Length: 330
Image (cartoon, rainbow, N blue to C red):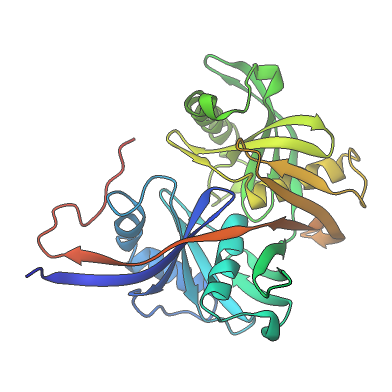
């Protein structure tokens, strides 16, 4: 008979191809008065659970986890964990959470058309678009304030030469890079080459911005390659690490791209921005309103997409398992 040291109940979903693993039970009690404080307590005391639950053999490099916690200031609270870093905000994960709440019956047509969610980046409003049969069709998130940090940054990258980027905050920091001047086609067959190029750009940007107060304490900006067919429509490919890319168009990355277009006057306030991943699955984004954030102009943008349940499961850890800590092959 097997002897188990611990067990975790989870529900998996995908949002435009990218996974969200909502961890329903097994997480120790977390202290703190805010979601950010509870996230920080988890990172300090229980970070070993992150690779155990997300990495192989129970997950993979691209797995994203979501830990629900109570909130004193919103309807729900949650923080996001991933293979390498903690995410202050995650658009695809929030859409996945909404789909999971609908799947478990915690939200429904009867409970209303929206709820608020406290994340480490702040409170977002999650709008629910129900189909005629009462199922959750789409989710629209009013994101935290987004703003342009650097309109233009030029870095030299081995094998690529000079690369131009804009650095934008949308709950996380992103480096927006036009794929066309670099000769890249954003397609699934080029995923490995794009990840390698994006990782090189990310390293160069990290080195060039490490002394900027703007980015103090923040994770290095992930590289969002875009391939535009018009000002309001583009394919996205987000490089997170050398072996990890966002399968979705990236919710907060889409917010960042729209924010830049609005700030530069390249798209009008009433236009919808269409972002799609390399599989052609779309997110939509639009401006809700302009606000001021830390003395600068910022945007509240809305990101819309759909998520789908893939499994419910109990993740077990046998006491004799030599790989219970998880592993990643980089």
